[in-house]
Image (cartoon, rainbow, N blue to C red; front, side, top):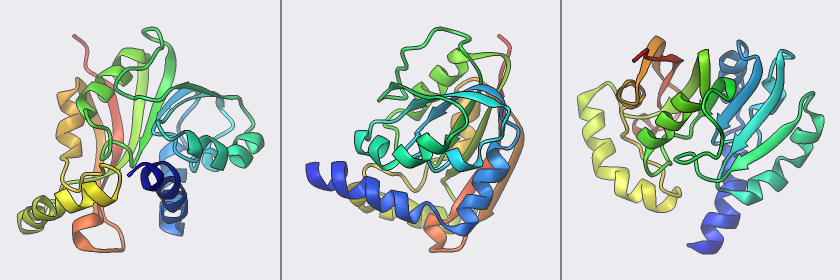
Length: 206
């Protein structure tokens, strides 16, 4: 799936993930961010146009190098520098307590080990920092969740490893975060693909 994964999928995701409802969710999610922000799953920079002026630097992690080229115009228009600091969210080459806040949008579905990636975010966040996230995942309706489990192997094959059925809230808390605000809701689209989680999480104090 080399050409499909490397060339087609980033372009398709750049188009599909830039709808009106998604733009509104992105804007609401990034609005409180400030300072130096770590973004796991930068993609094609779809969050950049919505970043508030209080952000002064973005550290981006994403495996799709084509995404950087597709994001070039958005990066040029940003009012702050965007620095790429890695390809793999599961291991980020940054010191402890390096960023003020973190961002993750529709990314945990695809990372092979989301718990490891969230643990890295927790390590890199400074005391008082928060993780803001929007993710699709396991449906609250058990009947629909069963169908997610059945369709998931097909979804992973055609969508670059994307999982339909990950319990996002459990993943976040399992990685050592406390969720201070969580909303679950359905977006327009097929029911098994449209269940979303959005919220804010802070590292638990050991």
